[in-house]
Length: 102
Image (cartoon, rainbow, N blue to C red; front, top):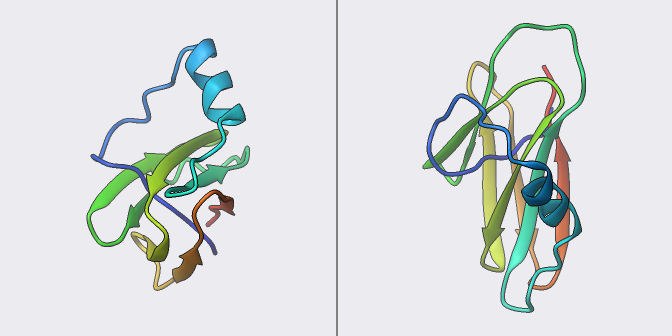
C-alpha cells in the first residue's frame, strides 16, 4: 500500500472544476515538490485516512485525490488502520503520484 496526505482531517471536500483542473496541471517551482495521493474507484466503504510527516492528515474517499506542496527532502506517508508506511526523498521541481489502496 502507498499513500499520502494533506493538512487537516476533513470529510473530503471536493474542489470546483476550475480548482480541480489547476491542481492537475500545475507545475511546481524548483524549491518545491508536488505530491499527489489518489484513490481509485473501489467498492469499499472503508475510510482511508493518510498522514504526511506525522501531522497533516486527510481522508480519501473513492475517486478522490489530495495534493501537497512540500520542500525537497525526505517525507513519510502513513495510513491509519495499517502498518504500512512509505518514505520518499523528493526533489524540487518534480511531481510525485502515490496510489492509496486497502
